[in-house]
Image (cartoon, rainbow, N blue to C red; front, side):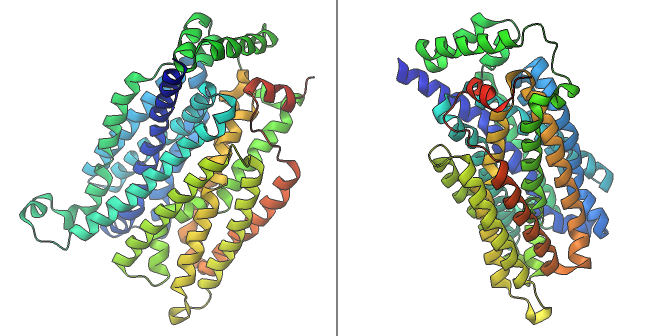
Length: 464
């Protein structure tokens, strides 16, 4: 009976984590399409940056709203809305006849991204046992990178298929519509995910917070067994009793003295996850490799290597996060990101034949590997753990807003930086940010593995 319940819990978590696949796949299809779109719509460097970052801007807005919406209407409803946004985005992008329509499609996708980034880790953390919570939340990141990798593979296959002369390929018009097929294929996983969500119950903690303890208990028993359900409900009731009489979470609550420490920690982690350059590396990978001297087909192939490296080291993070802990992984990853950014910078040193494409590729792969085993999964695990139940959704949204705003700025400026300063100085800047992040976070980052959310609330949030 217990084994059957554990299987149900893991199955539910995997379905929710599939939202990460949807996000990674849909968002990364644009990495390959951007090369063709730049020529199709005759975009300037800033317009090219806007084509990429309009997606991030919408995600920023969505992240800010998703937490409060998830707290009011439930985590499951937010995930359903995200799936619909991804579906609409793919259809609109594939049919776009002008740049404005394409931007609308990108923003629809961004709305889905923000919802997934907040609601999925929150839901998974709330139904996972403490001993496995880091690994379970990391499944969301794992599915994100699986989606990214398969998107890169999909783009590469579409480019390669253009070289064949089969009749059915002529009907698909891959040569002229290559970017449309790259973006439109995202509709398929969105439809599958919408169907899969039919088998996902609402978060028991959300139900308990909204006066439905019996339903919360029923779901906990079904997912984890009666003994676990009784213990969890007792801790939930104790936590809710402490919060009794308080109004719903408000922005000013986050600045209460007892919350300032964890909020500051979350914001710093959110900033350094993006300011070190990962969003630019993933969004412009094909462009970067072309700039380093790779041909068109080679740049798409090297982008596939980036996706595979991201996937492999996310799996390592999944295996290690509940054994080694959050703090060692994150600090180790920042060291690797700093070193590999310096390597990429050195590879870009010089011009023309002075560029070292091999060093650029090695540096990029090492950078992505270091991020994937640390900042990628660890940030969202930490955010799902360090905030109290009552303000978790709002707090994650606020940190996500900062994280996404930094991502927007980094992505928007990247084409201009590469044109103005070159790859050597651009990646040198990323290395400096990684070093600063390493120094600051080594001083303030706690370890959170192995404790329940209520225990973490008691130890990390100072009582007034």
